[in-house]
Image (cartoon, rainbow, N blue to C red):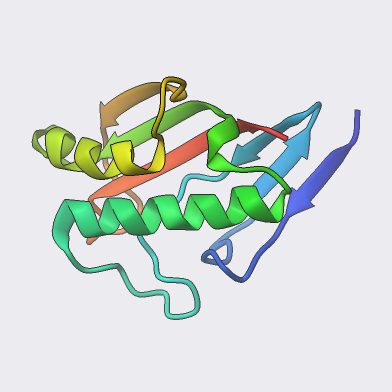
Length: 127
């Protein structure tokens, strides 16, 4: 088994000893993405919907840098600062995963690594 590290400047650089993504055994595993705007390290505006959009755009960039697409996502894990944001997050999420074949998903309320982040998402995607 080989392991390929995924890096792109179209998503926030890793803030610690981890990779934006890793390709292994035909799968892409992304690091959890918070709503950082690439290059600025500022949190996206627009509340939960603006932040969800930024997170999913970051994930899209990582997955595409690995040579795949969001259409091939098989599992998503969504971490919300406040579970009351579920419906608003889900509205934006649904615009990225359209059609009859969205990934499996878990959604949890969690303490997030940045005090202004309202959402974090990670993906497993077919390479």
